[in-house]
Image 1 (cartoon, helix red, strand yellow):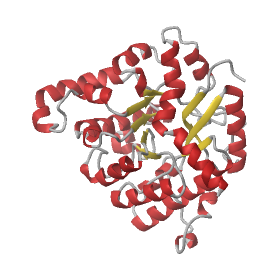
Image 2 (cartoon, rainbow, N blue to C red):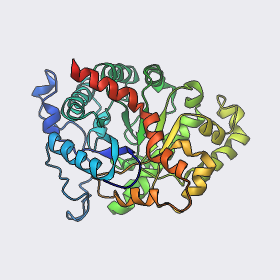
Image 3 (cartoon, rainbow, N blue to C red):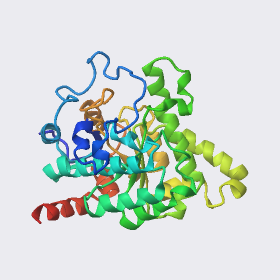
Length: 361
């Protein structure tokens, strides 16, 4: 057992298999033999199998993955882990509405019944048919009220318009009503959308597209006043670190000062002030050199710890050890980042109780 207080992992992952999800497809989609989500360039993510978390493979069953996760959590004093899909987040990129919805439902059923049901410490998040916000709101409601999912992954690629667009209001309204957060997660599939089709290597594409995709949606969400119009909605921006925030918010503030009256009418305050006062969260990388200054600039109640296990670029457990030993962060700030903020963002006390009640019944 590690010698630090309990931890909430706000962004780990599972390596889900399409064959497992396919079992939950409803007719007639269960007779369809196509892939459940679009593919991308065949990059060698794991670099000849030299990268990735040791002992965590793509062919592991859900039960094996849960067992592995629990061993990791016990060893490093992780009280609860919120786990994001590795491939299923791409389901919303499907163009056929009926098939997209069927695949989202199947994935959410799979996560609830083959991962979450095995432990009240594991919380896989769901996916939604984001191109059709009314349907997305309905599936969010089903997945929360019937399956108990704690959040939903909104990938930064593959959407018809940025996430601040009013077309998504039905989804935000339902998420706010049900008090469930929406988690915008960086990715690189479909990266030509943001100009990465001009890049040659995986390193270039991955370096560039994760932050740029998040910048796109963050800019839209804040300038279009989503946190103002839905003041109880919680949002997170995940897997690009945090030290971009002072630069980007300064830039947004400048544009708001010059053009906000006409082009950001929902914002009566600077974007930086809106973010500080809203339920907006960011995962961080504990070794970012300007992390203390960024936390001071935004406020320590906005940041989440994420292990990123078992992905190729995750630096667990080094990143957790470094956070607890960080010389320039107070003990109170470390505990907020590593535990309290994650518990608050996902409302894990309430969700865990509901999960236990479902098991009892």
